Amino acid sequence: MVIFMNNKPMLNAYPDSMGGTLSDIVSLLSGEDLKDVFGSFYILPSLYHSDLDRGFSVIDYDINEKLADKRDLEALKRLGIDLKLDFILNHASAQSPQFVDLVNRGDRSEYRDFFIHWNDFWKGYGTMTEEGYIKPDPEYLQNMFFRKPGLPLMMVQFPDGTRVPYWNTFYQEEHYPLYLGQMDLNIKSPKVWDYYKDTLAKIASYGADIVRLDAFAYAPKEPGAKNFLNEPGTWELLRKIQEIAAPYKLTLLPEIHAAYEEQIYTKIAEQGYMTYDFFLPGLVIDAIENKRSRYLAAWARELVEKNIRVVNMLGCHDGIPLLDLKGILPETDIRDLIDRIVDRGGLVKNLHGQKNMYYQVNATYLSALGDSEQKLLMARAIQLFMPGKPQIWYLDLFAGKNDYEAVRMAGESGHKEINRTNLSMEQIGTALKTRVVKKQIEMIRFRNSCKAFKDGAGIRIEEDGEGILRIIWQNEECSAELMVDLMKETYEIKETVDGSV
Image (cartoon, rainbow, N blue to C red; front, side, top):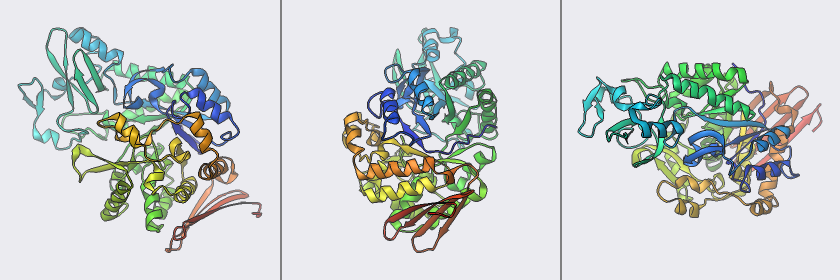
């Protein structure tokens, strides 16, 4: 299996997040302020033609010419910046050529089995309703995990007037003859595997080094089995995708949210994949706000001892993960953490509208820390010294605060826009002059260039139980040390080369 060895910091942004186009971002990364700061760039999937969920409902994987150009990607590679791009395994847009052909041609469409025909899937496992779809028997639903109320299906009207249900895990709108949504793919269809092969080839042609596998754990489905992380179906899916990706030397990064207590992150690591550290964002806030390091230090030690390779982060295009913390933090502490961030203006995303099924809180990381720039700098220092490859959300880099106007403009289900503000070149120019941004850039550049952080480095984590946390990276003659005093809200970074500080 190909394992991505570059653990340098990675920028994370939409192609229009910084200036308005990917070309603007290339200019910024070429300029004096940001040159040699990042070793990788995760470009979110509005890089492709898409229609919903700001990129995660892909129509096709051609480059969105309104926001980017292949020459921009080539320019990033010339800057020595590796690319991380998305591949959404579970679904495609209802506006994709395949689904549009299905809607227009019905049973005559060559893509009739490209998507999951609900009634074919559940035949013999439930009762037909008056509405025309099978309601599975209770014993077949008990292991299912649904992302929205009701059954995950969309009724599609064929040209002859019949209405046919198709599996739809995520977003949907029906406005016949226009359908909007993210339609689940039938991984048992040979055409879907042809699509997978073509898509990976296209992503590789863009110069991708890492491919983030979005929603992969929802793709394998069997009656009576889990529809999320179905075993062994999930691992078989990943194995087959890896076989396709291997000739292109692509590193796969499976994306999955699950509670720590489920230990799914260890299963992914045991399969030989890198994974996301979705525990770090909450653990860092816990450490800073509660002035304690033991939970954060314990997690850092586990990563080192088990040699788990991760991409870590503070903020991202989604919210701050909280469901993930179950089993690593006490339940009451997780609830206190949620309440604290919400009191500071964060927005809670609950599953199925149930308050006891928390998932994430949407906020910028600075606002989650009470708009304290010093706390943000502490958090960034901790992230950069944690085991793994640091991923930096652009809005955190520029010390963005909660954007309530963007939420208002987005309307219903617009909570994520609180942390997705597009910055103009003028706003970025102003931010680059501020201390909090300059200090972050200084630390990230150090992380990118210091030899202590090369692969193969030894990592040591120390704490005194009184709010002092030390993380030391040692690589041959070079070492880098972070000392954080959580009580005083201070941090210090030291580099030692051949015994000289």
